[in-house]
Length: 284
Image (cartoon, rainbow, N blue to C red; front, side, top):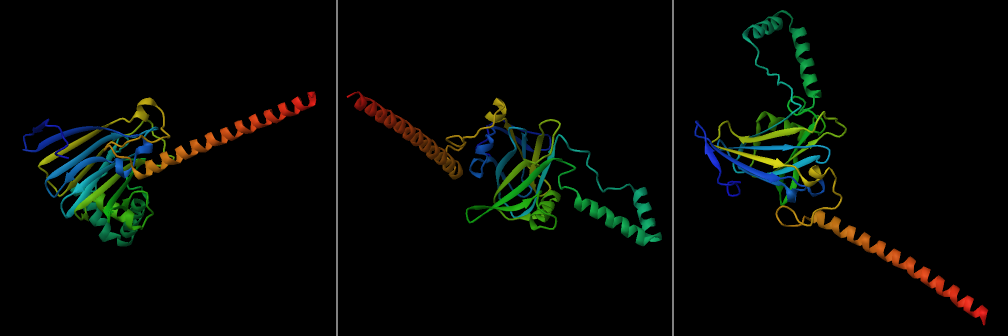
C-alpha cells in the first residue's frame, strides 16, 4: 500500500504517520477477488489500516485484500451508521460489589442469570451492536485459492463463526499471508438509508503508520442502475476468469440468437420462393 499511496502524508503529535488513498468502487458484477481493492499491509504494532466505504441498493458488497506480514493477534472492527452505543462490560465498583453480593447470597440465581446473559449473547448477531444489518467474511489464501476463514453469517458453533468472534475481539492468532475481507449486507434487511461504514484492521495494540483508504461510489451507484455485463477489464487491467466466462457465454448466446434469426429468415425466404414457383406454374 505504501508504494501505491500518494506522497501526501502527515505526522501527528504522537509521531504517527498518516497516509490517505482514494479508489473507485467497482460494479457488483465485477466484485471479485481479482478485483479486490488493495489495502496494503499490516504487521505487529506497526500499521493500522482503515477502509471507508458505502453500500446500498446498487452496491451490495465490497471486497478488499490485505497482506498480513506478521504472525500474531489480528483484529478487525466494523462500524456503520446504524451502530448503537456499544455496551461495555466495564462495570462501576458499586455495580461490581452488588454482583459479588448477589453471587454470595444467591449463587444459583446468579448462575442462572449469567447463563441467560450468555445465551442472549450467543443468539445475538455478531455485528448487531456495531454494524447492524451488515455481514463480514474473511478469507485466507492457501495453495493459490481463497478459503473462507471467518463468517458472521455462519451457524452458531461453526468454526467460521468462532474464528470471526476471535477476530472481532482481537484474539485471533493469524499467520502471515494474504487475506481477503468481504463487507456485505444481510439479505432482507431494510436500511433507513444506504449504510456508510468504516472497517479497521490492526495487529497488536500500537501502530506507527495509519493508512486510510476511502472508496468512492461505483458507476452503478452513480447511474442508479445495476450492470448485467461485466467490465472488459478489471482495475488491475486484467480480466477475471469468472467475468471472462460470463462474457464468453453472452457472446455464445448472442451468436445462437443470430443463427436462430437467420434460420427463420431463410425459412421465410424459402417459403416465399416455393409459393412464387407454384403461382408461376399455375399461370402456365
